[in-house]
Image: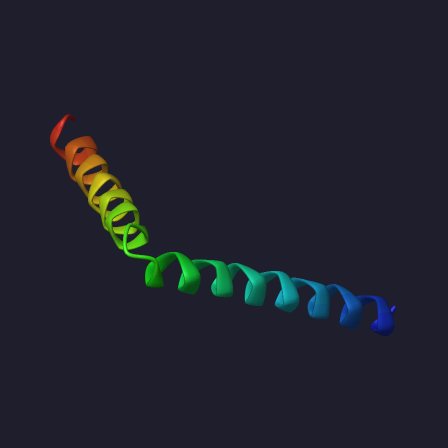
Length: 54
């Protein structure tokens, strides 16, 4: 059981590392930053709008 838990944790950590590398590569490409900031702005704007719309 402990070995199984370790392997799951390792797999999860490896997946997170891959995702982090993808995000780093995305941010380093010149258009990636625009998409990331656009997404962040959309999320924040949607959150604020949902608070105001009540």
